Length: 199
Length: 184
Image (cartoon, rainbow over all chains, first blue to last red; front, side, top):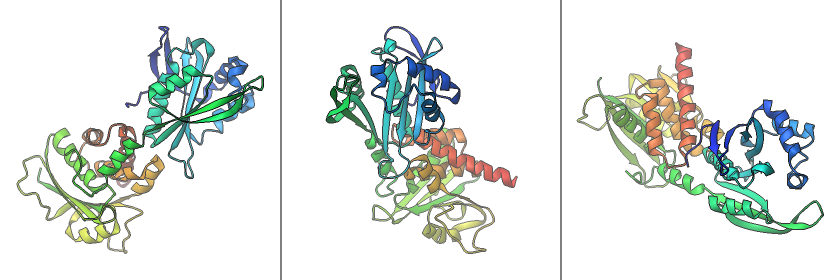
């Protein structure tokens, strides 16, 4: 997978050109507006109350330690998607990346999630991540299909794991994409054991 | 240019041979010169001593074994002690700062160190320390151009690993340039 240079302009299914670029500190207000414009049922599945300005400020400034890359997508100068890939920098899971993608309703199902996911996954691989995880409610069939199309495998389904606004419980699908084989090849190259493969 | 004799030494698993291979490729294929490499490694998969002999020239090379080293690159203490006697008096020593230990007076005049393993770990993968060393070699010696070395790295590492390997190269190159500029 080739790494995309940011910013980049991506043409999505409805013909619109979306600019994908790295998230910067100056985006704080625009990000807050983007999160606040999300329908409550979409926000409900996020980890934090993203309508809270303090929380968003922390997200932009303080919670960046584990971040490999955070991007935003802009349409007509307005943020329409936010996505990031995180990793732990200490412990047994430093090789695991967690993918998070949030897209405005008006632009969902246009292939933007796949575009953002690919950009982030490439950045993750470049940072040495071996396995990328993504979670989605099993109600989100399009998201599940999109992940599967990209090569993600359904690793687990956590039964009745998340509650929607009405208190109804849903299954949570945990997907993974293992890219460790790429680094296995590199490990073979640096083994200094047998003549280098491929030469 | 006369033939430049280089030895790269370290332990199995550090990517010593790949380091030599990339530098040879950079000099011959991408800088349009000539290079010859001979590799030797122990029978163990990891930890055995391992070295690459590399010759660079702008003319075809008739004899492939190094005798008087112009440059010695070492990534382990054993390699340092084993190969240091072969380095010319005015030769260049490039060493892994945190793995090579030496007594006062033991170090040659033109010696440059880099914490390549730590840099590689900071980038996310220890196994790219050899690519940090490739960058360091290019940055300090200038014997291969940055562009050629980057192309050789890109061409030699598995698909998908290029970005991290190129970051590792840049880290080593820039560290090398900074050391050289400091000395003036």
